[in-house]
Image 1 (cartoon, rainbow over the protein chains, first blue to last red):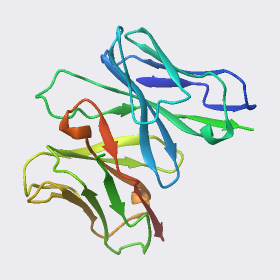
Image 2: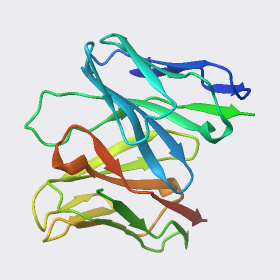
Image 3: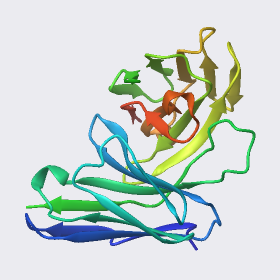
Length: 116
Length: 112
């Protein structure tokens, strides 16, 4: 079984619709992240969470919101989707129990979102 | 703000040729990570470099961290078709360790 799962894997929606992308993990990690990937731009961080009560904005949070329902679940919402939110979205986790350096991140399979 | 740049953006090589991707940060990094994303897949962690001037090898892959800790490179010797994918470097955002800033990636294509 995959350690980090995302649903749906593909979604086509219309401008103005609300949409939620979900992420679940069985790795037992406290830290979870949402990224979007656009060609040539790498991965850009949308939001991140270090535990159930912690939510932090990343570099491109406008137009997005998140909810950390439990340690294992982190969902991303687009309240009113627009075409330039068409992208590949990845959820990731990391383990905070380390030496204090950056911790490697484990990515889910991604959700391809198209907004028409 | 902090920027992490990678060059080239794309590279076509003949199978058996060598390949190098370069990563440059606008700020000094406490460490740098490298990830590989196969076509249609998700990024997978390859390695982390921490020390100035550090060199690490994984089979045909050689990773270097610059003396000033502002640049890094990944070199693949004698590429194979299994090396196809996009390679990303990533550094801790503002060296806080809480989040990563990714480079734009280098997409490697290998002709058999």
